[in-house]
Length: 282
Image 1 (cartoon, rainbow, N blue to C red):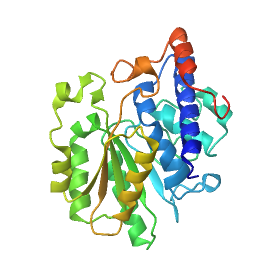
Image 2 (cartoon, rainbow, N blue to C red):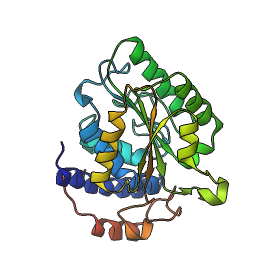
Image 3 (tube, helix red, strand yellow):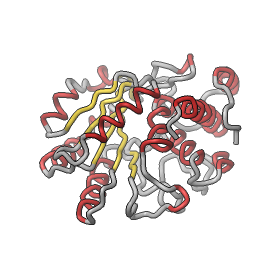
């Protein structure tokens, strides 16, 4: 799928899923999920080479994705369901005890599309590097993708992994940092300033792609395609993606209030009024 309108329609429906899923159980992380909707939609419906009907844990001859900021499962589950990894109606089981759609991704129940448990922040880049090196050893041309929160960069393991990938020239890896400037306790500047991220990643031997507006679908696609043009050229690639937490729902935008707080029934009604039903609710 490459039609911008089609992708935007998917993104709108995904946003409806996000607010409905979190409201239903009064739990979850809608803010970052709404902000990363264009990223997830573009990746799963256009950029990534994958077959949802033929998922394998080893990812042989397929692109792979690891979501390191594992708390934003509402957007991940919605996109996975909408592109065919599991039935859309299963979204109604989000965060219900014992189901496959736990609050953070889990491999316990064998949910197609999930290759690692995540949510303990900072670990996803290390796992992705291992998968990327395995693909090189198997002479595969496929790409490994990861997503991280900017607050997650406060974890030291991220920088150990970044140093390793740059030193070992893991150039079939594209990492993306969701630079929304927000985390659970406030802004990233207030909690622990990240400084010049472009300079830092370049110093670790990465090629940096800067994305000014990750909530613009065309810019998202262009950034992915530019990043892919650097694959195989001796350096891992990172996209520094600026987004707005809560994007698409006016009262949730630009604040950390809804980082881990679900919309109330009244707030859900207001949110849904701003989001047209495009693909059908579950």
